Length: 271
Ligand SMILES: NC(=O)c1ccc[n+]([C@@H]2O[C@H](COP(=O)([O-])OP(=O)(O)OC[C@H]3O[C@@H](n4cnc5c(N)ncnc54)[C@H](O)[C@@H]3O)[C@@H](O)[C@H]2O)c1
Image 1 (cartoon, rainbow, N blue to C red):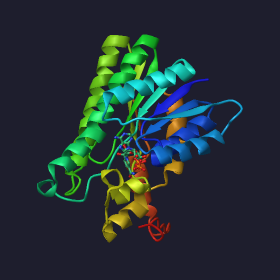
Image 2: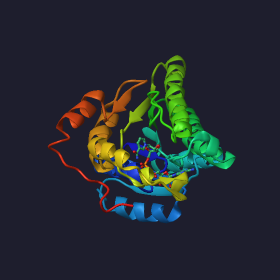
Image 3: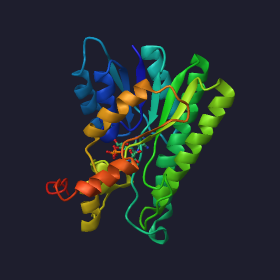
C-alpha cells in the first residue's frame, strides 16, 4: 500500500485530505501541534477502510526541524516508504496592517507558513532521495499569485515565497534526481474552515467584513468538496513542478456568472 504524510492534519483541509487518501487505499500519517484534535482525527480515520489501510498520528510542530525528522522516521518505521508528503500546516494572520503587527505575530506567520514548509520539504526531499522516488506538495494560498490586500501582507508574503521555493526546489529535483522526486504546488482556493475566522492558529478571532463573506459565499467551498477533486489528481500525477488547482480562473468566472442563481451562505451558523 502507498503511504501519505500530511502536516497540520488534525482538522480542516489536512484532515479531509487524509480521509480521502485513506478511502483511496493509502496508509496515512497525520500530524499536528493540537494533540486533542489529533486523537479525534485518528479515531475518524480508523473507521475508513480499516481492513486494508492503516492510520497513525504523531505530534509535530513544523517550525522544529527535529519534529519533522521524527515525522519522517515515524512514517518509514510504520510503512517502509513515503509516496506523498504534503506540507499543509498553516496559520492565518490577524486582519491588521503590517505597522500594527507585533514582532511575535510577524515571526509566527513566517515561521509556520514559510519556514515550516521549507523544513518539511527539506526533510521529505532528503528521505525521498534515499528511497529514490516520491511526491512533495506545498499548499499555496492568498498571495501566491501576487494578489495583495491590507491585512494579508505577511500571510501573502509567506505564501508567495512558498510558491517560489517550491518551483525552485522542483528545479533542484530535476537536476539532482532527474525528476524522480516530484515537487509540486497544491492550490485549494477559498476553503470554509476554522482558518478563515481564526488567526495565529486559533488565538485571535477574525471578524470577516460583510463584503468578504459575500465573496467567500461565491468562491468558497468546504474542504470535502475540494479533496474530491485534488486528491485523485495528486495520486495520478507524474509531473515534477506540477500545480493542482481547484479554483481556476474559469471556475471563478463561472461562479460569479451564476452567483445570482446559486444562493450560498456558509456563515449564518458560524462565528
Ligand atoms: N482556508 C482557506 O481558505 C485556505 C485557502 C488557501 C490555502 N489555505 C492553506 O491550506 C492549509 C490548511 O488550511 P485549513 O484551512 O485547513 O486551516 P486549519 O486552521 O483548519 O488547519 C490548519 C492546521 O494546521 C495546524 N498547525 C498550525 N500550526 C502548526 C505547526 N506549527 N505545526 C503543525 N501544525 C500546525 C493547526 O493546528 C490546524 O490543525 C494552510 O496551509 C492554509 O494556509 C487555506
